[in-house]
Length: 173
Image (tube, rainbow, N blue to C red):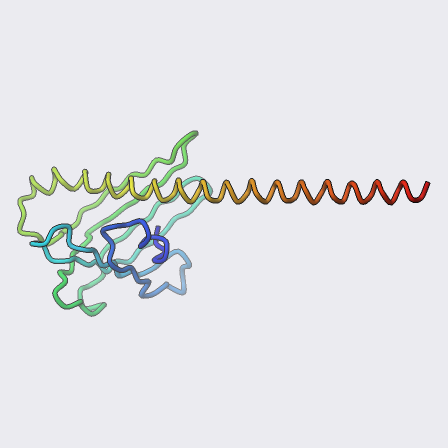
């Protein structure tokens, strides 16, 4: 989800994503700059600079993020710097699906009533997640097709070797 080359291909709201720093003392701690496109013409683009810590297990992950001080990374001209007070993403593999839960307290610095944001943001998050699922499912199908192709190729090679072995055995007789 945080690889720029992959995320930019499916996240329509993302303009740029950069790893600023990886904490050398912890391999799962990062500082990212995330630049988001404007959802509508009248609203300026937004960006976030946040430190993230990942706790990863085989079928479970928790990602915790919070904004760094504003002077940590230069501001982008005409882009409003938002503040993530806390952002927690929990990803868990269930029997036949993945459960993705997010908890967030963010100041988007928008002159829009909280009631409107509380109404619209869940829908935006759902559409963002649906875009992610489409991407994931397509990639999964592509990987599945490649695996099938490889398995067929291996089976073909195995049969060819088997025939060659039979021919050699017949020559020996």
